[in-house]
Image 1 (tube, helix red, strand yellow):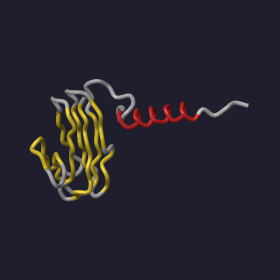
Image 2 (cartoon, rainbow, N blue to C red):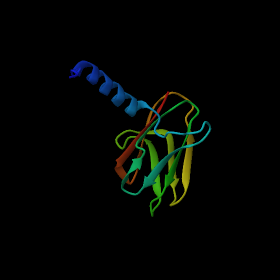
Image 3 (tube, helix red, strand yellow):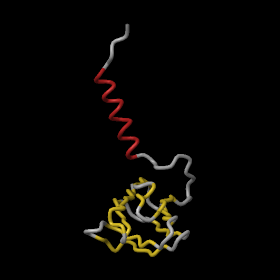
Image 4 (cartoon, rainbow, N blue to C red):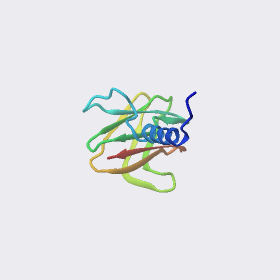
Length: 119
């Protein structure tokens, strides 16, 4: 009967969890292709976070029935990185040119927040 190696299992699980949280959000993404984020009124962003390289373009598409105002930063600390009014079935694109973590939220639904990490 095989013995159960708890320390090795713990290390493996920690590695898998860190990879799942910091790896690319989409599999099969082609270089130069926009990274997409779905916006829908009162529904969390999908995906809520992206981890991409410098020069990546993120495209937020509004699938909701009403216009949405996308802002960079957090509801309590908005930043001037970007701000966009997105009509229903329209998109906004932003190309990130420097490393860092950039948060974003919907102005009319401040509990709908997301984050882009540029490496």
